[in-house]
Length: 422
Ligand SMILES: Nc1nc2c(c(=O)[nH]1)N[C@H]1C(S)=C(S)[C@@H](COP(=O)(O)O)O[C@H]1N2
Ligand SMILES: [Mo]
Image (cartoon, rainbow, N blue to C red; front, side, top):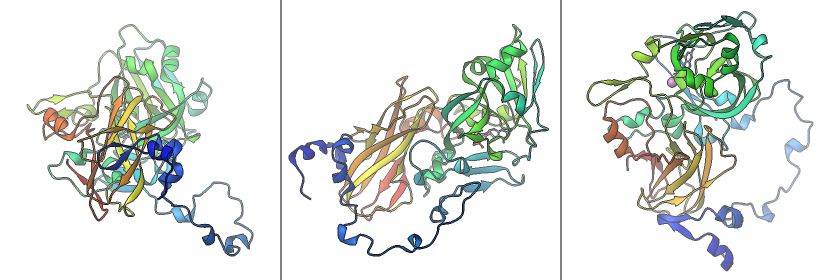
C-alpha cells in the first residue's frame, strides 16, 4: 500500500502488536479502511430490481430491515417461574451508545405484567405529611427531565467468576447492560410535594409484578438523581422495561430500578426485603455477606472484535467497545493487543456523558498472529478497571455480583476470537 510520509506518521504504532495512534481516525480514514471500498469497475451495472418497482406502502409503526432480522436478544429463563429470567443485548451488533428499545436487556423475577395504565396507581406514603396517589396522566404533568444513562444488572458478567473461561460472545457474557434516553419526573419533586418528615432517611420501592420486587434506597440517592421514568428513547416505556412507570436510579445496580412501580414508602431505615437479603448481597471470603453494594463500578468491554467472531484476515481493523461507570464520566480507556504488556489510549467518541455508555475506538493493524485484546477504563474519580486476578483476589471465588474486571479476547492465528483469562 502506498502511503504519504505525513500519513505514515499519523498511523504510527503506539503499543505492542499493532495498536495504532487514535489520531489515525482523523487523518487517515481511507488508509484505515484498507481498501474496503469496491472499485469503480464493480459499480452497479444495471438498475437494481428494487429500483424498478414502487416501494412498500407506508407503515404506522416501523420495522427494521428484514436483512437485520438475526440481530436478536438471547433469552434464558429460570424455571419454575414462567417468564422469569433474562434476555441479553446483542452488544457486538450495535454501535454508538444507545440501545434500541427492542434490544434493551430485560430481567424479570416473575414475568411481565400486563398493566392497564388507566388502572395503575403509584402511592407515596410512610414518613410524609400528605400521602399522595398518582396515575400516569397526573405524573406526565410534572416537570420532566431526559437523560441518557446505562442500566446494568449486578449479575452481568458473572460467568467470568467461573474457574475456566467459557466460550461465549460479548452478548452472552456482558449482555445485561444497555443504555437509553430515560425521561421522567424527578422523585425529589414528588416527595417534596408529599412533605418528607425529619426522621426519614430511606425509601422502600415496590413493583406491581407478581414478584412484587421490593428494594430499599437511601433517601440521599432519591433526592439526588432518581426519577420515575415514563419514556424510553422517546416513546412510552416498553412493557418489559416497566410500563407504565419505573424507578430509575442512575449508575446503581439494575435490580434497584424497580419496574412497574406501584409504591414508595418513606422510612427511617432500610426495610430488609427478601430481594436485598436473600439476593443482591455479596458473600465474602470469610462467609459473611456484604449488604447494599449500590453503585456499579468502572467497566469496559471490546465489542468488536469479540468472542466467537472470526477475523477477516490480516490488515487494518477498528477496535470498538463500550465503557461505563456508576461514578460519573469515563475519563480514559486504554487498549492492549498483547495481553496487557503494553497499552495505548483509545479515542472516546462524543458524547461522553455521566453514567452513560461511552463508545471507544482504536485503530489496530492485525499482523495475522496471535493477540490478546483488552480494554481498561478509568473514570473521572480516578477509579481503574481491575484485572481479573486483582478482582478475584479481592473478592474470593464465591462472589457473584458486580464482576467488572478487564475482559480478554484471544485472537488466534486463524482469526478466531474467544474468551480467555489472561
Ligand atoms: N418489579 C420489578 N422490578 C425489577 C425487576 C423485577 O423482576 N421486577 N428486575 C430488576 C432487575 S434484577 C434488573 S437488572 C432490572 C432490569 O431492568 P430492565 O428489564 O428494564 O433491563 O430491573 C429490576 N427491576
Ligand atoms: Mo438484575
